[in-house]
Every structure is written in C-alpha cells, then in structure tokens.
Image (cartoon, rainbow, N blue to C red; front, side, top):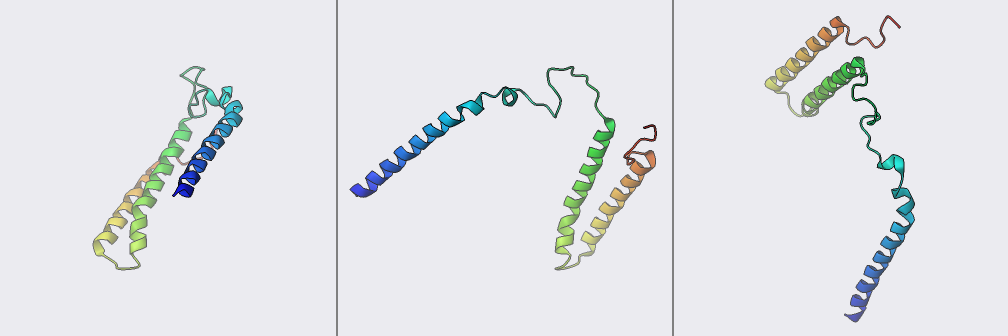
Length: 120
C-alpha cells in the first residue's frame, strides 16, 4: 500500500515538474507579435474594411459547395445500392441529380463556370 501511494506521489510530482519545464521553454514562443495579431480570412484587419473582393472567387466557392452537398446526398444511396434497390430511393437520387444538372447548366449558360475572363 505504501509503495502504491509513494508511486502516485512520484508520478504527480514528475508531471508537475515536466509541466513547469515546458512552460519555461515555451515562453519565448508565446510572445510572438505575428501570432498574437488578429487574422481575418487572409486580409490585414488594420486596413480598410472596403477592400475589393473577387466575385469570381465567391462563385467558385458556391459551386464547390453545391457539388460537395451533392456528394453528401448521393453517397448513402450509392453505398446502400449494393444491398437492395428501392424504386423510391432511385427516383429520389435521380431527382437530385436532375436538379443539380439543371443548376449546373444554368451556371454554365450565364458564364459563372468560366475560369478565366476574356478581357485579360
């Protein structure tokens, strides 16, 4: 019983000592000016809040999110189709694909999917 108690005290003291040593070694890195400054989406927060933002970047992000959600909606059907085929889940997945195809064709026809502008 005394051995277990002394071992527990030794382990507690050793861990406290190691924590104090690590705090002493890390003190230099905690006082970094770059790390303590705020960071907002890659922009310098001290500059003007009305800095220009690329609308093309925003549209590419929206298209990426649409296709990402498409994968999330269709993945359970694809994984479960090996076990049994249900006509309602098949029609539901076909409807999702049809709606996303119509949306993609609409974005393509209005020029949102062109990566480079012709004026460059």
